[in-house]
Length: 528
Image 1 (cartoon, rainbow, N blue to C red):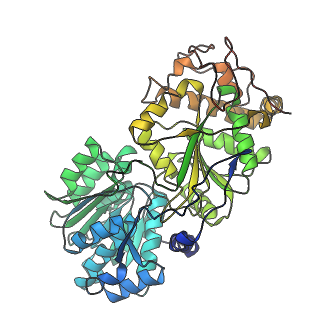
Image 2: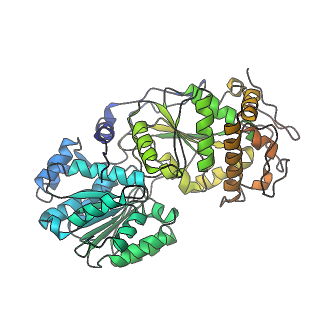
Image 3: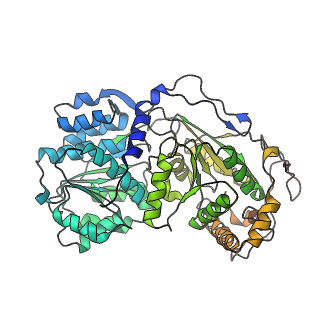
């Protein structure tokens, strides 16, 4: 409400999906080593033979024209499996990979439901769509805006960080279809007197697993208590867990239609994604990141970190040393996050540093590289992160996971989750040797020094809270080496039980890594 959702972002995404089968990206390299692409054109993982034209008679003709105007002709698998039962008024529990077309899968039946009921503004809110993050809410609202062009249905967006008073005024006038984040939705349900939901016909919970992962379990329980039980409900989730199952029991009627896409797929990530890992000792991580980003400055790259402070520091440092980049993290004001999000979406190239606030559901066009600089907490989080690239029909992209030698056991967990990574060959003697300059800069620049200390401490605390402690064991860390990746020659104090010596044996030779084990140090050739 009051947010200008830029159509250019959506249209670029739509064009990318529409023309995906006509495009094939040229081979790219990690440093000087080429990644081998499949020479043959990939068959779409998502599309079926069912056309949107086949919905004529089931869906309002103006709505189908909007879909056609946006360039869609053929249904994806999740759309083909869910739209018919949803049009019949059934509850649906759907599981699908991110980027598979689920937004249209739930929006079309929801809009059609209100069209059939000849819904008027004075009836109040007929459909509520709950999304985990503000960015995903804005994207859903953007698609809704395109689909409802020329429609009499009113629609709105409420989310944390926006003008609550303006939202309240619009809700009082009547919003037929409402997109909301859980916390702000509950706020209005509890405190906005003229927010009319007693006639609600449909509840959609998008990215349910993500909603619960970021701590909205209690809010969702309270939201459901405010809504009428006689309604249709749809729940979409990329993964399932005991918490998701509990939410299903609360939100959906018994025996919902269960839809799963690619349940038997051999790989948990999409076909067009080339993914691999690089093994880097702690003291070389920042040099690796700097070199990689400099080499790929004409690409579109997203880099994931484990904490807001780490994003903040690396954003300040990289821009200071002539590696322009943007950042999104949870401590930023909503206006800043929104502006950065749209800027990166519209950019042909650029670097976005982010926390997992940006990891789910965001349709950012043509991302070339996903770099997981800090390790994900579990395989599911890895899958969510790499879901930002190779999205949609015949999407393509690359993903790089940076691991310390002590963390190689994480590959077993990924393999068990149907994610197979190859080791990327990386020419370590091409890595820029700027360690001395970095340490000098951090020691002399008060603001960078302060930011680096906070990032260093947050990195260690995040590492200490890792769920896979058999792999990500904070006590194995050499603090002197770790601190070098934040520009320190001597590690700042942090109140954690960590010694300054490595405690694990590193394999004698790492394929493609270019360094060998010595007793307590790494021989690592660099080029000045």
